[in-house]
Image 1 (spheres, rainbow, N blue to C red):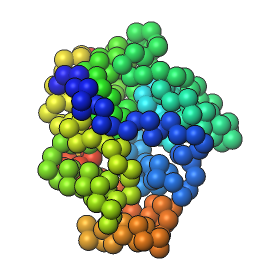
Image 2: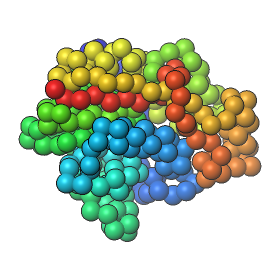
Image 3: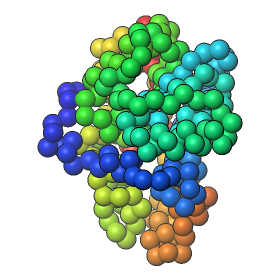
Image 4: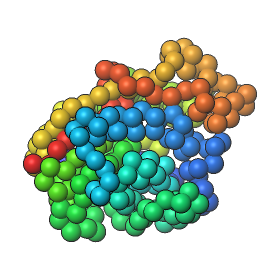
Amino acid sequence: MEKTNQNVYGRIDNNFYNADGDIWWKPDSILHLLKTSINPWRVGYSAGIIKKLGIIPTGKTALEVGCGGGILTEEICKMGFTTTGIDPSDNSLQTARNHAATSGLDIKYEKGTGEQLPYPDQSFDCVFCCDVLEHVRDLPKVISEISRVLRPGGIFFYDTLNRTFISKLVAIKIWQEWKHWAFMPPNLHVWKMFIKPDEIKLLLARNGFKWAEHKGSQPNISIPKMLRYLRKRVKGEWTYEDLGKNLRLVESNDMNILYAGYAVKK
């Protein structure tokens, strides 16, 4: 893969994440679905790998690239890591700092981008980059930087969206464009920026990683039921909070839409 063409990158609305106020932790907000609907899957996956590998987080350092308002960062900190989050959005970082302080969590938040991480070589034992790789313009540079700041033997956890016909139908058409069901803003994701598993495996290999595995995800309910739930929100019968209580991702072998994985720095 190469750096994304500007004509394609110009279509994605990354400014959405820099909106004023707390757009992350309010229960009736779209980004709070990251906590209620997606975090149980992604945190469960990474925690399971950490346990399987015999990693003891206490005394080890972790970085989240693209931390936003800290919804995943706080879970990383609760695992026991000395945790840092980095993000280009001032507003999201302020939200993250405020929530961590309220929660009594010692997390270091800094401004920066994945393409130019402001840390020395081999600074971290683990790096997390979730729901971010499909948003960056220079994906090869981001993977290179993540490799640079990881110590040998360090673990890179990620999840991203696959570029398939099904992901275009579900993640773009149903979730973003078709108003009968859509619950995301238009252009929050751009399908051409989605990443096939073989593409990220190749980038990892080129940057000193030993790829380990990929795991897929699926809704905890049937597709017809998911559509009914999305319709209830559109009609005002449900809030985002209601949706988050009833719809969540679970681990599966289906990698057609959202998949997770990890790799080890050689």
